[in-house]
Amino acid sequence: MVDLSTRYMGLPLEHPLVASAGPLTKELDGIKRLEDGGAAAIVMFSLFEEQIRHEAAAAEHLSEVGSESFAESLSYFPSIGGFQVGPERYLELVRRARESVGVPIIASLNGSSDDGWVEYARLLCQAGAAAIELNVYFVPADPSLTGANVEQRYLDILGAVRSEVPVPVAIKLGPFFSSFANMAKRLDDAGADGLVLFNRFYQPDFDLERREVVPALELSTPREARLPLLWLGVLHGQLRASLAASTGVESPVEVVKYLLAGADVVMTTSSLLRHGAGHLAELRAGLETWLSAHDYASVAQARGSMSHRKVSDPTAFERGNYVRALESYDSRRPSR
Image (cartoon, rainbow, N blue to C red; front, side, top):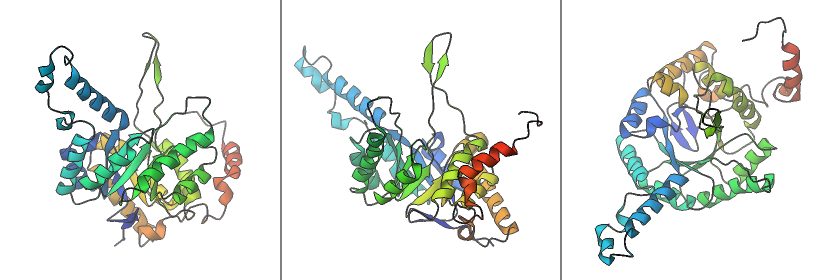
């Protein structure tokens, strides 16, 4: 029997497969299906900073409509505190999920500024979240903003939340830093309990007929696993923080690769949207079969066995891989 247990940010998990933030966690029924399907932990869909601000502003506007003409009109509306605005609906879902399922519930905050992060994180802890994932989505479109400014924003958000909440805090970030390993180390030093690699940046598309910029969303594919695979392998053994692999998980193959690179847990949403929550059981069974067939007694034994520190040729993670990749291409092969 292979021991699949692992720990993520100090949380003991039965196995390393985690349902990441996505549409399946927007309702309690979906959360229960994920637990029944075999998720070791569940990351809630993200609470967006913009949605909170929009709902609060809308409620404030309703409470003031017509007040200049009819003083009594204010009595038609309850005070703003009576509205289910901001994080209230999200908080209630966290409470109900915590009471209804037996696996850890990780809340997700998605924003780009440090305003409000601490308050919302504190409320999520009170609602029963076992941990907080800070999903920092920020496109530095201002040319006057330096790389140092961008990095400091991440550190400020993490520091503000970490200093105020008692539960573990992970930060989900993209790879677009001039020195990603250095940024990871600085986040680790700043108190991050976990790093989630990577956030997918959804670049817009153009509608040529209407000449509008439109959103474009596609589910991830195994090809996208290569970049997080690289950085997981490089970072393994160098940080105190847990490492979570995200993006590109479709089959047990990606799960095994991520663990061998050094991930503590493997997260997926796209594969569950394609195949249903029960796909988690298939991923787990495939992982156990592979580990057993290759004489690994546990996930802990396999973790990081192909990381930068463990492989016989570490240059495969660095410039040497670039040269070898170019030399390995066979121009006679048909393109795909």
